[in-house]
Image 1: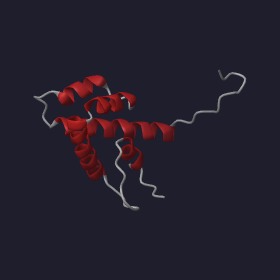
Image 2 (image 1 turned 90 degrees about the horizontal axis):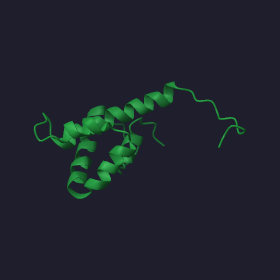
Image 3 (image 1 turned 180 degrees about the vertical axis):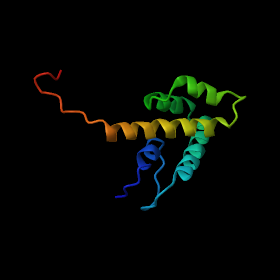
Image 4 (image 1 turned 120 degrees about the vertical axis):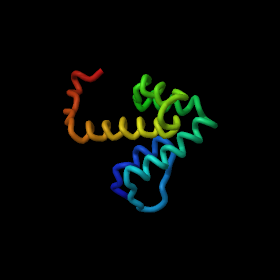
Length: 106
């Protein structure tokens, strides 16, 4: 199994790389951009549901979707997803959560 830190980000968008290939940030953004562009055309509701589940800021999504935005919507959304997921990965790595006492669990 590969230890590529980007695989969870790709998996959320049903992108399954072949083999043990390593990707850099630019390649991941390209793959996300293509997949999001396709989803905008074919699975729009699912895409927005996924963005919500991934906790991508709705205000930033609206800005990225604005027709006057600097970049195409798919590219802007890919960057938002990438940044959000990298922040989540960093938090999981840096923040240690103690196991909940079974007597206090609901």
